[in-house]
Image (tube, rainbow, N blue to C red; front, side):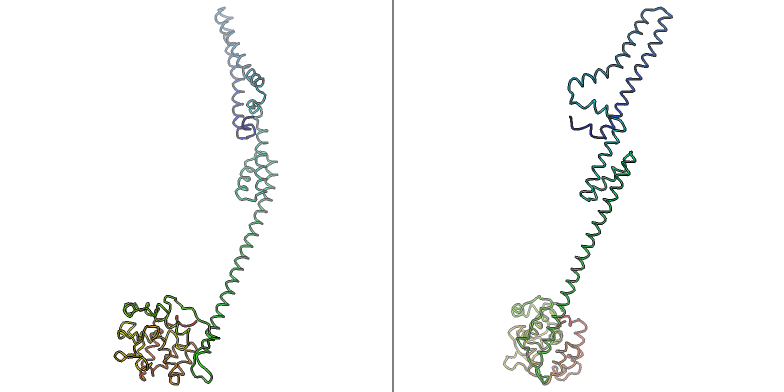
Length: 374
């Protein structure tokens, strides 16, 4: 057996053509020779020439050899080796046997599709079945393929439902997480607000046992980085960079002791220092603090601080120290209402009636409430 070539319907289809060609030669050539021989024989009889008869005899012998030769070759091949299948291939190369092999091949592909429920295997099987010439086999295998298709569709539907359930579960988990975060943020804001004033509305610090810190909204600067920042670096900042820097300092102080909302701290620093460009050197005082705190030295009219964190800290402590003047201000900060709180800041600028409006305008123009607890 050589490569099972006789089991391939494609090979047998080629063999069928070869077989037809051989049969045409075996039949047509001898007939042609016999006709020619008959013509030569008639000519020989009429003319009485021996040469013509000799040619006739040779052609008769050639026709016989051509007719018998394939039989002789087949006999020799069979006797020489009974395992050789070339002759068997040609012998089996008929349309009925080829159709059977194609049907077997299609059936095997259908079984593979049944086992794997794979779309590629299904497509191969469908092509093979559609090409069958045996209508009975084709109809039978098509029914089997319909079952396979139904099973594939059902499997696909189940997978899609499982995927949707997983996605829905993930969405529900995210919603629950967001709800927990929002609840926590509300709790944080409430703790801070409740800690800003003691009994009777007087200002006070947050109780350490109840206080939960808020993460910085931008997280660009740590407390240590703020303490180490030079005045030259701050003066070279753009407005947005200045907002972020002072915003981080304000949030850290707000986390530590409550009090002034970061948006108001940033707005006051922006107004008092020309957005960080025009405060007195070596003071780190961007808040225009003049009389407070009394224990700090002055350079010119401004109190001098060691760094920007310290000046931000004392800016908040100023309002706690003078809480009797800024009671409404602190209560509005407690209510997370920076615009209303800014309306109570005229005393900060020696009673200026335009000062509160300027702070409110800066807060609104630059959306500084994004730095406040949400």
